[in-house]
Length: 341
Image (cartoon, rainbow, N blue to C red; front, side, top):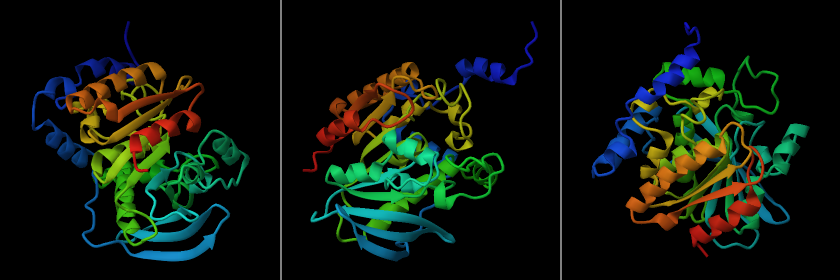
C-alpha cells in the first residue's frame, strides 16, 4: 500500500533519528553535559544576554490585603520590554522568589487571580493562579508575561479570535527565520527577570524558583536547563518525550526546537538541571502530554539524577485530572525539596 501521509512517514523515521547526545549513548562521557549545553543554546538560538543590568521602570506600587504588589517593566534586550508584577507577602523579610509563567492563555493576570473572561476563570479554577499560590506558601512571586501571550502578543491570524490562547504562530516563525526560537527568547526573558530582581532589595534574588503549566511549564523546563540560578523548577503538564507528545500530535509552534532529535530527547536535557531540584507534575488524563510516555520520560530523568549522585532531588507528582496544575499535590513536594525555611 502506498503511503501519502507525510506525518506517518515522519513517525516511522523517529526510530532512525540519531540522537547523538542522548543519555543512553553518553552517560559515561564526562564531557556530555557541556556538549548538550552548547547544542541546546545553538538550536534554541538563545539570544546573547546583555552584559549590563536591565533597565527597570516601576509603574506603580500597591499594598494588597496579603501582599505588597509592584507593577514594573524591564528591558530584556534592546527594544523589547517585559511587563511583570512582583508580589511580596506582607511582613516577609527578603523571601525567596518563585517566577510564575502562564501557558497558552490570555495572560499573566491569571497568575494574579484576576480573570477577564469565563475562560480565565476556568484556568484559575484549574490551579493556574500561581502567584497567589506562591504567596500562600510564604514566597514572593514574580509574575512575568511571556512573549506572544497576554500583553506581549502580536498579530496572529490563526488565533486572532482565540481569547484564551496565545498568539505564537507569527512570532515563532519569524524567530526561526532569523536563527532564533520563541522558546529561546522566553528563556532569555526569565534570565533577565532574575537580573532585574537584583534591583528589588525586598526579595532574595539568590533564592530563585520557576514554575508553570503547559507552555509555561515548557518554558520553565528549558529555563532551568539554561539558567543555573534557578534552584528549583516545577514544570507542569509539559515534560514528556518529544516522541510521546509534540512529535505525536498537534502542538503550538512555540514548543519546537529545530533539529532537536538529531541530538537528544527532552528527558536527556535533565543533565543540565541536575543536581538542582526538579518537580515534574503531570495529570493522569492529560491528552496532549499523556501519562504513559511522561512516566517513561521521568525514568530517564531519574537515571540522570541517580548518576549525578542526587536521586532525592527529582520528584514526580500526578494529579487525578487533565491538562492543569495540581497545587494540593505539588506544593508539599516543592516545600520538602526547597528547604529554604
